[in-house]
Length: 327
Image 1 (tube, rainbow, N blue to C red):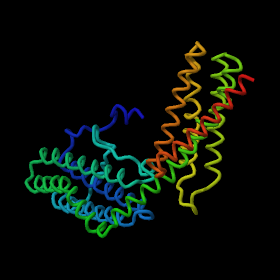
Image 2: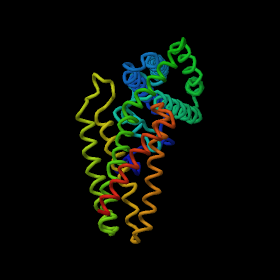
Image 3: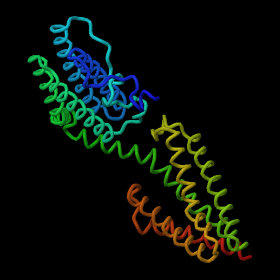
Image 4: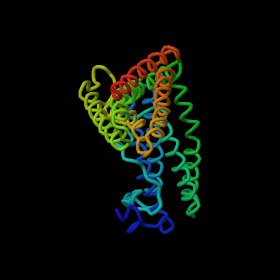
């Protein structure tokens, strides 16, 4: 940990020899090719055409690695020093593959652009530290190649994602995002916002005690969030329905359920009863508006229909809570 944070035990880039710079470039190209193949593997099932783009980018990195190895053999022989990015202080790092899954198209493309920019910067700095003409030329060529990979990626996308394939993949990504995150999150937000209205406002008007009301709202919100999260995760493993990771869906549902309930429970931390209640009413209105907006944007529910469903349902539950609390 200390080595990663403070660079203890790492070599300074300025202290590397030309052989070590080549060795570092070789290992970096190997890592980048492996990462691109991991991206391709992660995208292949849902986005086969984009996976083909990353496969060809991995082949590009293989070509760079081979050119570097050939130069190293010519100048320094067959024995390549074992020098990797984690051995050099201040050198850019790559995230482990498991940290970037599940892969989405835009996220993956953005990470690839960052990779190319970092690699280009490394080659530019490395070229400035070499005196051998052939080495300097190769490193400069590779810097230019990395800088030009964005154009290369665009060319590959045109090759593999033509004839509507790109639009189809983007549509599939949006559909998957809605199934995995939006639907469970929306269900949770609706449940947390609406189902907790009755117990919170019934307690508020029955006791007139803001602290007791807050505790009831907190317990109801957390309990509903845990229940909704486990129900969503356990109800469908996503394999047949294609709704994605049950853990991701469970978290989305549970967290949004808790947030929906806490929204109108937190105002009761205000000691004055009527001030807290008025603020809670405002928060309820904002919650119901947010639910309506999400339904319209992601579920394509017409504004009027979504508003009527949410507002009428929320108003009935709120009224029930107030009536019960005043009984």
